[in-house]
Figure 1: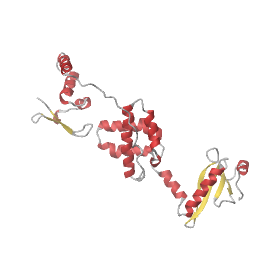
Figure 2 (figure 1 turned 120 degrees about the vertical axis):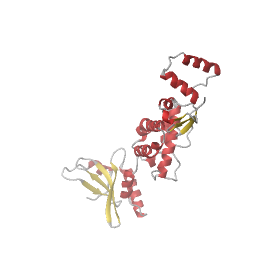
Figure 3 (figure 1 turned 60 degrees about the horizontal axis):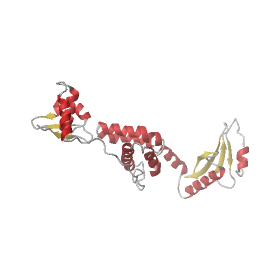
Figure 4 (figure 1 turned 120 degrees about the horizontal axis):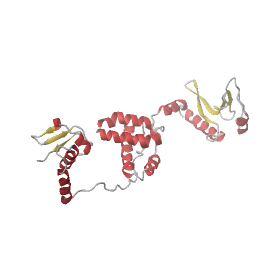
Length: 274
């Protein structure tokens, strides 16, 4: 069926339970309207490339896509074909392009796995709690500076996590560019954001406070594991998790070196005092 596609025509067409209805515009070659048997009205564009006829759906008729907007899309697709493009192939490639959820999976499998357990846990939480809920279905290449800034602003009440999220995203999109998932000629969307001030956490004890703490530990029962672990942290500067994971086979008491096979910043040696 052929005819000038107008809004009146689009509104008047009724579905045929036996088949889809196709109307081809007489003013713009390749532009058409499809009415499915279920009554869904969609704008389409048909063209030839390499002697093959190809057809793509521009979108469903409605508020999101008016007749005027669909006609403009068809003009753009026709121009693309005339300059050597293939809209159908490009649409398929765009549909298959990796999403932020795919980026999270690959980041954890190929990058985070090389880091410490705590770093892996932190990365997994950033993706699961913040990035994937907000952008999971978005294509990696479509994410903008504004997208990440919006998430960053929503986390203003937790500045450490907000800034940590940007650090993670910066590395993730840097890897995406290396993997061909994000254009190299576009700036990393996680760069250029104003970081939130991070108030100092904790407090360094003075000699008097350390003395009182030592006296309190001395009053604990001999062999009390928590007190021993706390004193061990004070004397070595290690983290509580590292103290809990300490094993005798990692201790060289002759050289007074504790070899940590896995720490937050990677394998390291702790020199033990007398």
